[in-house]
Length: 308
Image 1 (cartoon, one colour):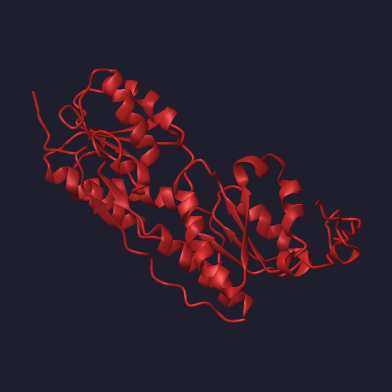
Image 2: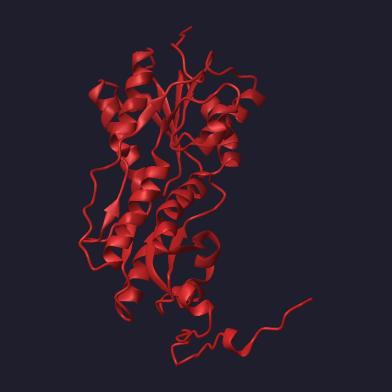
């Protein structure tokens, strides 16, 4: 039998001049007031659901719940997104998305001192607590591996506008290539958005480049798209091209050939950012860890370079 909501269960939403809901009563209020907002750039990339799992594993035993904001959708109307968390319905925010970060923090500064922490995807904010992984080391491991296999000419596939962590990663590739004595003219940048479809389309650009033997994709989605695009063009991986990705998402071990990629400690990253926000909520200064270590996972998409 369908139960009617009792009067005590009523959620009373007040709407003052700034249009932010401010009061919650009934049994749902306390739970809402113990939620943590997590702003992610997209839910299509498998990195972020795994990150959210790590966050939840730490928050739930402490009695907090996650509320996810998909910036890819919400940021089309950022004012609408802001109205959903500025009134401190959440007790804190974990910011994982570029572009919207600075606007969110500026808005919070005018309303309430809501604790927040940045992951390495978010825009830089001086003095803000940030938890990151060691993307410089990860990029260096990719380059060391490929140069060790004899590769001398490279394509780097990534979008023109990079979030904080990927900008660090891109600089890491260039610095490592220079350290190995690879001249800049031997490295070609290929522009592509962060999707598998864009990686597939980028393959056509790569095969037109002379003498390229190694392709570095800035994340696994692009790398997986490249594998498909190269196969459709009759190119073999790793015989014709070695392809390396980054993130070690679940699909990396299930494509053909299996993808060489950098394993990020995504669950550990989720645990760390959640612990950081809990410390701030408790009025403590969080002890920020050093950048979390990464490890190259070598699989079948890379091999020794072959030259005509």
